[in-house]
Length: 433
Length: 171
Image (cartoon, rainbow over all chains, first blue to last red):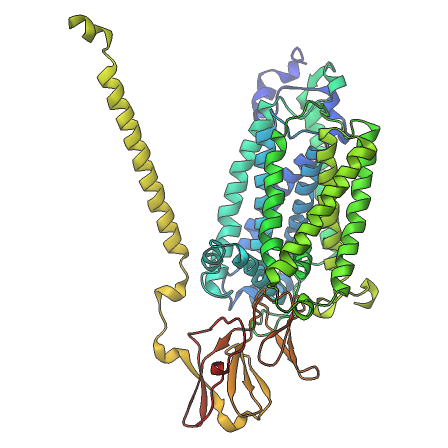
């Protein structure tokens, strides 16, 4: 619509910022909602919500163990909309992790991680980690039983990283246990360092999308016509952003962010659970030696994610979810196998007597570390072998199957940890908790 | 000779440039190292900067008669348990689970320490009964002076198994 008078001078300068982020024109086919589900835009919107609500909360919050808890209580009880403000920040934080994760899954599924989008994928991976870190550092700030013990457990995980783990943990805590220095560190990380890093990395992320020529275009739609970003794309983004905002407001007015008793270092609540996004990791810790659960497995998954764009592949699943019926059936099988195997793994490890009792002479690093690790990777390897024979998937579809399997397994672990673990972290039915 | 100079006018220049480039790189590395060191010292645990006086680390928990033989008594303030052996010996155990730092609870019925976070269990001497805890509960040296049970808070000691010298007897 370059010939349209409305886009002349005045308009151009007023909406200059939008056109700084977006190209002037976008391909019509990329406007289809189901191509991206607007997840990246939602994540950006959530960042805006978090920055605004966070800055407002900062006016009231006092970062010291003596007054932090009371300042939150005071905010919730004596300030009109104080509770609402905290609720919005809380639920948006949770939504942020979810949306960022789904955004990554969508990218993985549609093959949008391959060059020239590799840097977008890698910066996105960094952003996801920062969002989780931001969540975790914010978790401590209310200084209640929930936050104190979740952070105690979460930071203790670090001490199992060989060599560097203990110094990192001590530096983060500012001492041997969670205390004033920890709160100082976490407050600064949460309200300063991490947001700045997120904004910087996000700018890079956006720029890489522009460099790649916008979002991924489905091969057959390569010739679809170009349309003006404004109004076509911008209006759609606006609708998504406003709907998201409405949903967050609705949830925040119905459900309150949890606040337990004031932190008490002498008593761990029973059961003491990590933040929900770490529950899968905590569940893994019940079954695996910590060195494997918090170091070897996560590092392996992360390394695989970094390496993913560079797997040589001639398959072009640009922008489509499944290349062939083979891909669909292999993804389905990966999902089912992942679910069943994880459930079996949890049940067997629960029923079997403890290795200390069974094999008291063998070090736990072998009985609860190496043995289950080899069993787990062996089963995945066998499954992939079977998949190759059964569905003959191509390389992209194999990657997809592995991604599905890892995600599904982590989901099962998380659900088990949240809903099926009662007092003393024993397995119980959710209705008996 | 004249020709040679005209041919290679950039030669000395090139050497100088690469030297300067390397110099900048080295300076940059030094500056980065300095910055990292400074950040590290900012993050340094405060307990190392203001060291507590030795007198502070020795805490009086109670008098010897307060603890019955075979009993396990929690001290929530100092975050430890005083275990009195059947033969009268004292053993001080840290409250902190060596797995992930939760506070273990003494279960009088089953006579064991339970960790509420990941269901580790320890016997009354702090030895692992069920995983995932990777090692026994840490212990602290007990000193008995003038009928008082004192614990040296500064040396929380890791151990692999129970040894008789971890127990202190009132003489």
